[in-house]
Image 1 (cartoon, rainbow, N blue to C red):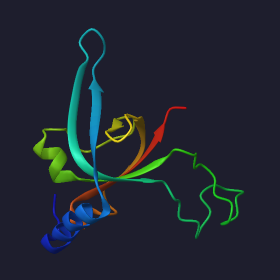
Image 2 (image 1 turned 180 degrees about the vertical axis):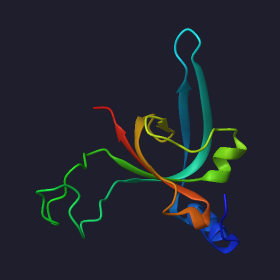
Image 3 (image 1 turned 45 degrees about the vertical axis):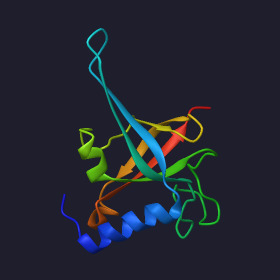
Image 4 (image 1 turned 135 degrees about the vertical axis):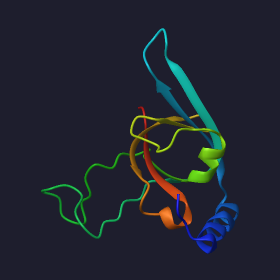
Length: 131
């Protein structure tokens, strides 16, 4: 996990300023009756997902009409070191769960971008609620 110490410190300050909240990440490995549940509760920034509309996200959609975003989708930014310290197996992956402490919502991880914020040691997650 290579990252820039200055960016890491900046992200830590940003978490404090932006109002991070506790998020429990959960992964179930294996199958019943031998399934194992792994959890880690860490601070993360959670925001309603606001897509970048500078370019189309799906074929057939103009840049002003974004496809594939549902109400209730969330953008979660979490520090990889915090998950590792809690012994959560990295990388985060699709279909892991994110449980928000603010309202108890259990979200399904639908996309993980570990590269976009990697210089700061952060992971960007798109998660969706089950309606």
